[in-house]
Image (cartoon, rainbow, N blue to C red; front, side, top):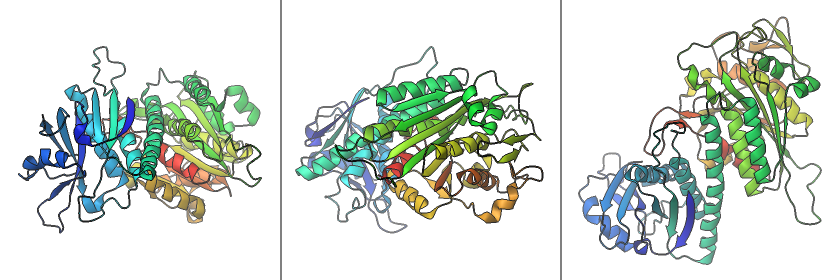
Length: 517
């Protein structure tokens, strides 16, 4: 999708479709909806006034009103998109409304469209005071870009319903505000594209995206983005003593891939990073297909296990964005990719593995493989000099049981690192809910025969026991663990999204890294 930013009255823009946002400004729980358009253009407001006066359109989030040949506008169509209650306006709501506009345009064959930059000067209250221009324009671009993709990739009768061009149109404003809007526009383009890159990886079937192929695509991305990338396989795992990662990989005929991507900030001439400057470590679970191994999963729903590399995809997408945004902090990403398959060479329940750190692990369940590859990935990241760690993984069904498919789980061993992540969510708009991983839970993973077990041995607190396992390998290094199992795949069609891979965590990881720059 081509994108451009214009500063002019939206009413004078000739476009097949102009989208404008609307809010409900009514006060009180039982009050009738009172709809206001977020625009200062009298012509745009007048074009929709008679229809809005009927009360049929209530501006709920994702609600749409389409007007053909709107009076006083050069646009062929005017699309009004609801943002919900004005008092509840959020980054996430703006992103969803922009996505709704694009999704509404696609089935109508609209190839070019525009979105009016939201302004609230016509309203009594400053409803957008917590959404500065930079964040608004960024959210619109992200929402529009993410909404544009469909997942009929391999259909022979695929119909091209792409929106090829999007214009964000804002009124003429002072130069400072223009620069803020432009900054958000540029960042939104970068992050939206990075999130889509991650989603495209997750959407690929397991017979296409093997660990080797994931390594090739990561390396190609790094070459294009100017990042250093090294891809290793079985020999390197054995050399490093990655007994946990190698155990998972050896059940498959497909070799594993250890992918290491490095971003080095380019500083002004004569400047260097301080010796105590943080080095960010991004570790991703890249199980390109997960049968469960010897502890095999049920057949029902197993086809979705191609998405078990969504944590790796999030890290690869985040690195793509980091390369473009150029924060002044060093970043190293370690992706541990393998297939988890049952075979004569597969690891078994009851096996004892020795991780790279030297810790021994009793295997209770071979379907708890993600934490094994991450264990070696986290330790390896520390040996590469990482001072702060974040990992992402579709790790546990237990997290889905606890939080459903609205919030992903987040765990941490460090309050400062978590505070920065919580701050990043205010920009990313993604929903994460913190769960505990205190030493009260440490006994849950104690083993009689080895140092630790790879599950808690019962169904209770499964997401926490997985986090406690990873915490053993993070050690004293500030660490964030993202369990994205419930949010990495959209199960429902919404006005702003289709079913399929979400690209969750890319935006939050990027902002967390930038907060250390």
